[in-house]
Length: 122
Image (cartoon, rainbow, N blue to C red; front, side, top):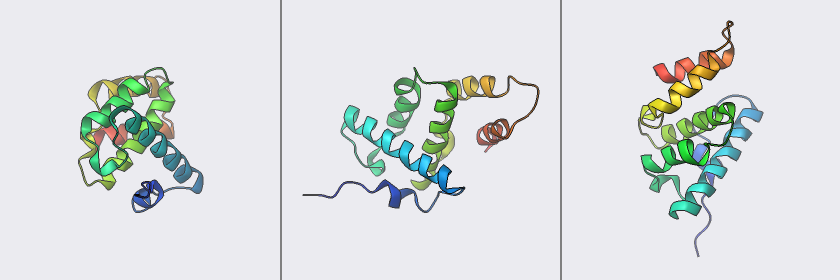
């Protein structure tokens, strides 16, 4: 019998920020893991392919708010960073356009806007 994959340990090296932010990333990463496991029987991020993460962001979260999808995009970028892969591949162009349209619709630049713009530039 094998042990379940420990997402806390997996992401511990790449997470920064406040305790609440780290807990949100862990909760969302576990949710991503469960959804991908249910769809493709891949319970370990080391076995995930780009199509799995993009499916989660574009199809599984299609009925969620733009803000929710944005935060899952940040979590997916952390997972991809931990895997040592190019995180720009995770960010589908259509997803970025939709998120930036919503985030940048106001006159004032908020911290979320700056983070979103930086994520696209990096």
